[in-house]
Image (cartoon, rainbow, N blue to C red):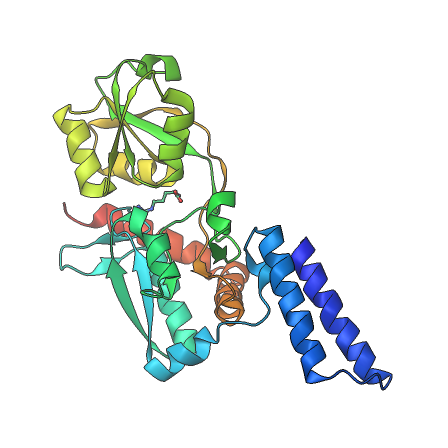
Length: 294
Ligand code: ARG
């Protein structure tokens, strides 16, 4: 529990206890308390779920509307990509389908560049993000995250098989491709700034893979699992080395204070992890990607 949650919980308990012992709390006193909380909150200034006085009522809105809008960046197999028939497919799409099903609504997919996802969620243009998004302190300030649904070995530096790049130092003086707004871009900025030329792209597959194969960049940085499946399908690529970023893989992002939606999302993920369905979905979607053409 963070400072704000403790504070708000404390005030609520105080009000309940007050009511319980017949301590009359007038409406104006409650309003005074609320504005006190608001001003304390802005002083704490951190944002995050802990600051929520009341939930956004998003679940009710989604149910009334009859569909939930998923924001994703469909360039990241096996998590999300566009198949030959032009459908959005992958692990995240499967999880999103189950969330929609649990809510009893349809799933609408909005594909955009990865770097635009958080702002779209904040603007209410999408209801949730599933884009193998890794929770970070920066992101936690503006959106809320579900429990994670897998763990990652970290970032993989992918090069052509013919390349002799083996270490960070080997990247110095070279062009390195990363996706705009990702933790891979953060890693590159932290470790290669001023030493290598970092080139940021909006889409990983096929764009970044193409520029690598064309020789426009010497390496691209993606997550371990994405590197694995790209390599299996394209024998001209290899992993040069792993570079930081290990730990939590992906989680679902929901708007701040959308505690009701977060609860539904968490229960879907929890069930899938518990009953082995998550593992099945991962395997099935990896196989689907590997057996697909193109
Ligand atoms: N896990 C990384 C991040 O959160 C990269 C995610 C990229 N996802 C995508 N759909 N392109 O920054």
